[in-house]
Length: 128
Image (cartoon, rainbow, N blue to C red; front, top):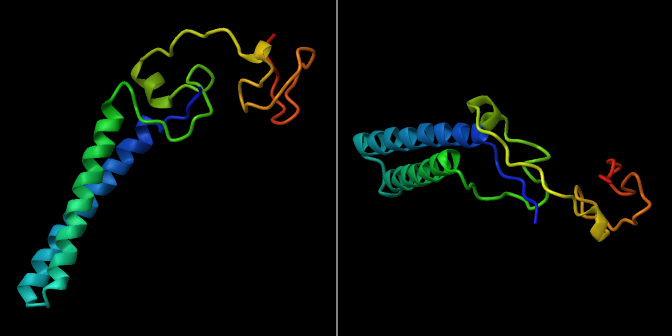
């Protein structure tokens, strides 16, 4: 099964924005308590802060993990490497033999025949 994994850059950006959201939640909670707002206003800030912290921890753990959670099961990293891995000097795994001989396009999964040069669904050239 092939997979599309979220890139380390977008995951790191998501973690940073979650940290900003958590800080906003803390500010909201303090302001709501300071002005004496009804109980659900500070409660909203607390829930917002907790959600921001949980999402930041998840995103940071995924961004720094060698085995990230797949967003979609389609593309192999050998076909489309993670740009941040390339920038950090981490090598992609060595290429493996294609599954084209099994009768399916290795890029989109559409059925193919052994005499096809290009996939009739996605148009990509099939490996021989």
